[in-house]
Amino acid sequence: MASISTSTRILPYIISSSLVRSRASPLLPHQFSRRSFATPATEKQQPRLRLGSTAPNFTAKTTQGDIDFHQWIGDKWAILFSHPADFTPVCTTELGAFAKMKAQFDERGVKLIGLSANDLSSHARWITDINTLSSTTLTFPIIADPGRTVAWLYDMVDAQDTSNIDTKGIAFTIRSVFVIDPAKKIRLTMMYPASCGRNTSEVLRVVDALQTGDGKGVTTPIDWRPGEDVIVPPSVSTEDAQAKFGSVREVRPYLRFTNVGK
Image 1: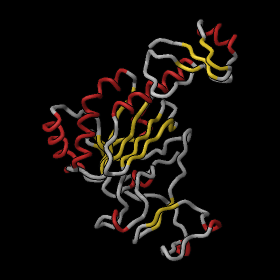
Image 2: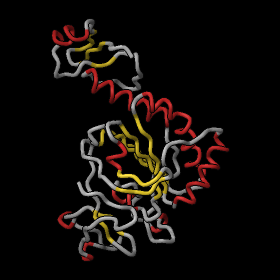
Image 3: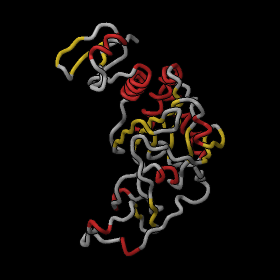
Image 4: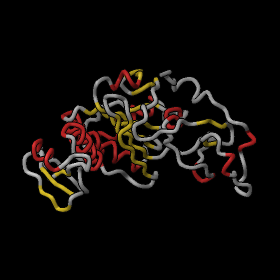
């Protein structure tokens, strides 16, 4: 897959300006031939990212050097999470919290990488502030994305609206989370508005759920945490589940629990 550099262009596809309409003249269904967001200065098509899609590759400058995203992931899991801007209050608290939890992600073979819509010099000053305010040491890389290149590529933007277009005419970057597996597949996404901070414990919890599901062939119920009962998938018979897991507790024929430990 071709890489996309944050120092060059955002996306190679341009849609017809005839598809741009005012709020008074909305697009008709047949006119949604390509998925895109427009700023006053430009129109850029975005890839359609779904669970199971290959995470788009890109090259970028980070606080730990230049990277090719797929090469940087290697054979690990990865969490890519975006921030609207440096030196903003919610983002500062989030990065401090992720920094404190990095060891827990490391134990699970998960690499963290942040993104913020500012340059490297700003990132360096901001990290100093984060470390001081959160009493931590931030050691994972942060992508410099002042042109919103990666933000556009991953659809980490709010809908077009004059209230969230900054002075450069670029849509505001939101708080997105992408959990990506070693095969470079997008396994889970979360999207938060800029005003709402994320729950770092929930990010860790869903990593545990995904890895347990992959490793044990089970599914996980609401609010599940490691060590609690898991669900036997409907595709597995009770007899096969008993042979594989041992004890199986059947609440309904379609709802059966077992335990696979931590």
